[in-house]
Amino acid sequence: MTTRTTAGERASIFDGLAAEIVKASKGLRESSASRNTTAEIRALAQNDYGRPLRHSLGRAEVREIIAEARSTVWPRLNDESVKLVSPAEFTRLWSGLGVQFQLASLRGAEGLAVLGFYVREMGNSRLPLICVNTAHHPAAIGAAFSHEMGHHLVGRLYGSRKQHAQLLTYTAYGEHLDDPEELAADVLVSLGVFPEAIARKIFLKPRKESQAKSAAAEITDSISTTVLKYFEGRFGLTFGAQPPSTKKLQYLAGVIHFAKLRHALLTEYDI
Ligand SMILES: [Zn+2]
Image 1 (cartoon, rainbow, N blue to C red):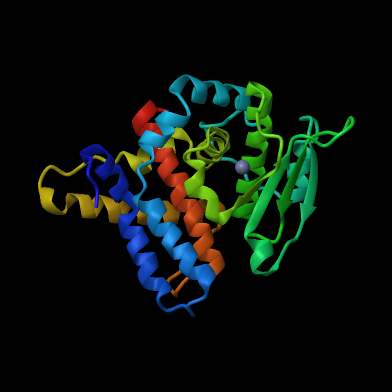
Image 2 (image 1 turned 90 degrees about the horizontal axis):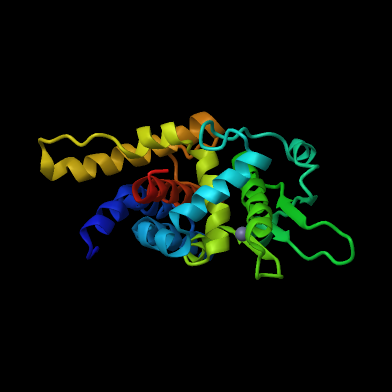
């Protein structure tokens, strides 16, 4: 399945989780949404994140983005995990950051596919806009606020080339790997979710020297279980034993994406 040794090692981390999800989702009524999400999860789990990260964002750029984020929005970024607050509280806390907010509850399959978006150009004297779909789980809402705020910071830092709004949807995570602006916004979410000490604990477990044959499988299982437990304990996002709903499958795509990106930041840049 993999051709490069180092990439293969990285790619294998979530294979076990993806396989479990695919197995569990067979119990679902085969809606096209769940089929697509299952395929996306499989693709994300197999993607190598190290190379696209290096290609899209250098170590110095990542450090610069972190410094900007710490000096403006998240003073404890990468030291502590971000706190989930209500949408109204997010807008209150971030009211002085030169951006306006629009909250909307978009339900139904199409509405729920949208997590949020950021519009940089709002015309005469109007501030850029962050819109967040509040019909989601608080963890997904928090990720959307953080991702869109990431666009705001990165745009100010580098001057964005993009004028149009970019929707944050469940199905676009794979595309973010080749898009420096999207990846930069996701880096901030990943660091907010997994601060360094926690990331090191989860992703850099010491390997057992013996039982070399089953070590890879063992690490894969323990890491995916640890990541899911962490999301449950820290952010109240549960996946449970029964077959996940389409919505939960979509959240799992996000969990895998942000976990793999965090792992790549650690192994590629020691961040
Ligand atoms: Zn985005």
